Amino acid sequence: MTGTDAGGGLGVDLHLELSAAGGRRAVLIAALRDAVRGGRLAPGTRLPPYRSLAADLGIARNTVADAYAELVAEGWLTSRQGSGTRVADRVAAPTPGPVRPTAPPPLPYDLVQGKPDPGTFPRAAWLAAARRALTAAPHEAFGIGDPQGRIELRLELTEYLARVRGVRTTPDRIVICSGAAHALRLLARVLGTAEPWAVEAYGLPFHRGLLAEAGITTVPVPVDEDGARVAEIPRHARAVLLTPAHQFPTGGPLHPERRAGVLEWARASGGLVIEDDYDGEFRYDRRPVGAVQGLDPERAVLIGSVSKSLSPTLRIGWMCLPSALVDRVVAAKGEREPYASATEQLTLADLIGSGAYDRHVRRMRQRHRRRRDRLTTLLAERAPAVRVTGIAAGLHAVLELPSGTERAALASASRRGVAVEGLAPYRHPDARGPAHPDGLVVGYATPPERLYGAALDALCGALSEVVGD
Image (cartoon, rainbow, N blue to C red; front, side, top):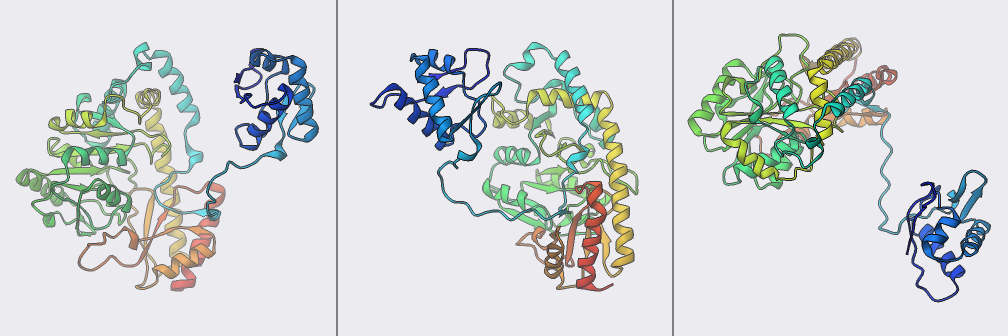
């Protein structure tokens, strides 16, 4: 039977099995014990008043009152004037299941790349945008949505991306998704698995794994200080996945001649350029680099998201697609698109349209630049043998180390409480030719201000231990 608190919403719905043999009081006590022991009633849960539960279960009030009193006496429940009857804290029992190994506690200093400081999320601006957006939203916005995404957001993105990134698109060629990974999965489904994709020889292992899971073979393209060496893209590749604005993770932008060259490859081969614009808004030392997509919108797809600019928990991204791919991508996405919340899309549209998003990005750009400068200055003083690269843009830097020292540097950093990544795992397992020098990929966006100085001190200490002053 199910009992509900009908007297003011002070309790919870209860599913209690009362079909066992025996008196009502004993059966009710056993059912409540089982619910607590099994974890269905968590510690602190407030139970319905005994009158309400008695009415819903069709048993006498005194029976429920006596059952509650018995369980309070046994320590299963607590009862206090004005607070009602609750499940006692000390009787909490874990839900039965397999024993899992205990995860080690996180290291205190997080210098892993790609994550903005959660404390910088613009809560007040987001809340104001949400209020405006929900007030202005039409009723149909709360029904089954358009799998292509809310038109309000696609309109704002069309203007914003043209202004900030040089993108040439229209609202009907933008598809909203839940981020870069979702976009790649959709493109993999649409383009098929018969032909390989070319990828940069250094890139996210996660993206390579995602394509492998989709059945796509990836072919590495060498990278240098001018980005991917696009002349070495195989002619038979179906697509090439690039990070032209800021090669990830080594850091160089794609040279203008190579930007033109990759589009020549696409026209000659019938292939597609897939541009991961993961941090294009964060450039510091030179004029912004426009999107490759703007040079030929029918041969390139631009993928973007707010994971670096706002928060990775906002699962909102976008694809600017060639016209021939829009319907196929929308069909692959499905009629009842489950990934990007319509209300969050509306809120982001307002945030962009009101100018609050621009203001936030400018603040973050200044903050990240100050942090980058602090990192490079301290390294120059305390670890001058370490060369810092890839710092013209983004949220991370690459620290080049002497050959054979990467693992030792990682171990030393870990002992000092620093979470940081080595460069080697980013190299494609099939890459040929000389590897990039040993290195660390250091994210400088994540730690809160109160910890950033200590994190840099610990990192410099680790580097000094391994490579000397």
